[in-house]
Image (cartoon, rainbow, N blue to C red):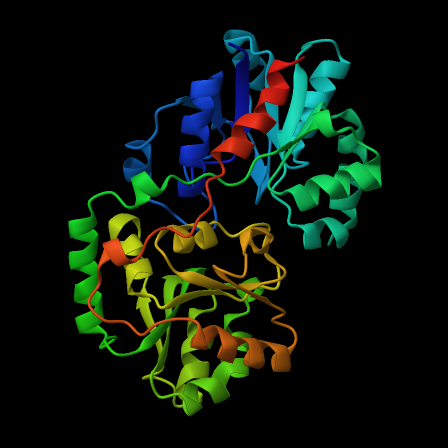
Length: 374
């Protein structure tokens, strides 16, 4: 069994199942560089209770925002003695792995887990990232990407062979998320009563309140739909710097009864919100992927997904609709069509909400098998 050392910034909910499953295919250890995600603090105690892979932390060393250097990486490599080391993105950590190899201090193959959407691939936003990508792609033995569309981009633009690119769709286990259905139904029905959702078509957003999620702009765009259709409610679950702006905008438009902001939730309290939704919305103008789309599909919600989100690659006509949030007319017209395809909220019953998420394990197994052939 090949040994993989995976270096990641921090533990987040959407990587747990992927790494648990990888631990069945390889002997892995995951090294985390932070104790929590910088932009959204998760309850790490709860997350760790679901972890079945080996992990460790390297926390000493300087960092500035997302740029980080950690002392002890070379020592961790020598201790675990992996066959392959996987960094993340075109980060300073990945560049450091190249340096160690160039100096002859390590001889392992090096890969990196790249979360970019196709839109981000085509429109690199900074010169630094553009140059880092140009340098890194030539040196990486493996690129791990989220979709076949991104894989084709790298094959065509950089003339990479297919065996150097691993398409690893975001893997979240319906069984784990939908565990304890009675409790989830109970909490969801409490939300339905508390927020008067019964008889309404509930559009749900889950995530950070930050500019790139374009929530204020989306509310402005769909304002006419919210007013015309009395039974529509937009629920925004989460927290972030844009909350005050969103609240002010909602108040100015007299939409307090149409746009609800119940707060930030995690675990079963979050998953219950998906059960309350008639449909899910992700209006981002910049989104490497969007793990919340997987979660919404797993809980049986169709998704109204921005074309700029990487997760748009998993949206098919039977489980949602893709739209351009920068085109107001298209957004309104497609939203009306989307609303016609979803149901009003009644009594919550998970049996009537089967997962809409396709099984990605077959692709997952085939793609990761490329590492075992070298």
